[in-house]
Image (cartoon, rainbow, N blue to C red; front, side, top):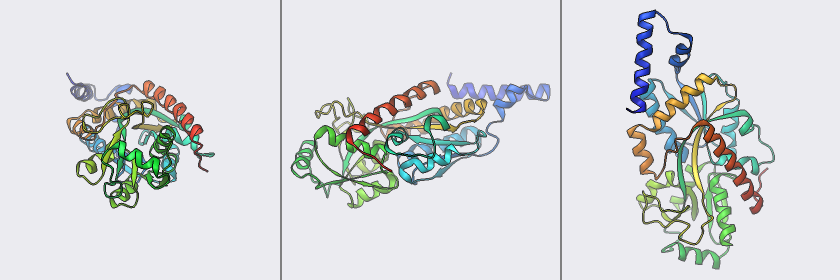
Length: 331
């Protein structure tokens, strides 16, 4: 029996109770009334980036499951911190949520000042997707046959190539810094206001390369517009079995994933949090969502809220060490 079937049963049961008694018990009213109107989801990137690649399919599935819209509100800028600050200050009424990413566990180490505190002002609910980072190049600008040829060129030509990122302090940026540290190379960083604009400039040939989440690059790799030279981690990705992983290329410590999760503003009612977690989990497990995730080489981690919180704390510590070692800093 699937979670979706069980959820439908619960909803039918509550309706039957209302028909018999004329009203629902208080606990049932709280659980059954959400959502009674459209739900807002701040996405801290411009449209077209990796976050959108998961937020929009999840939004469509949410609408089918609940009959209410999940409105995606793209708020790019300030290296992903603009949208996070807006979300942290949103009314905690159960109808405002935030789809953040790994970048938000990097930002506290990169910026001297933030107008929000990730751990104090936002409540982690659910991790919705995890994809490995991928090193992609414009094949016309970087004519390397494989990763070895690429690395040889970079070592012989320091500062000759540049890489685009979703902004200073994002995982795209720090993945590049980590790569430079581990390979003892130098590549110039070019920050953008989101992964979407950076990826479009990579395709257009305005930047040479990018350390991107596989989710947003997948379609362009398959279409031949960009070329993948490496995926991070200990194994090849099932969606791109011909692309070698960092372990087999001699970079066993280069493990970078781009993950996405949902938070709510501090003060959001516990019953709304619980229902939101349930609905977002069901949305990510629909057949339509599973197909999108698989096509982008992504996994749905299916963590509890507590496990997601513990994972965030580990990521905060990890990226703090990378920032310190690289010397990267933003005002």
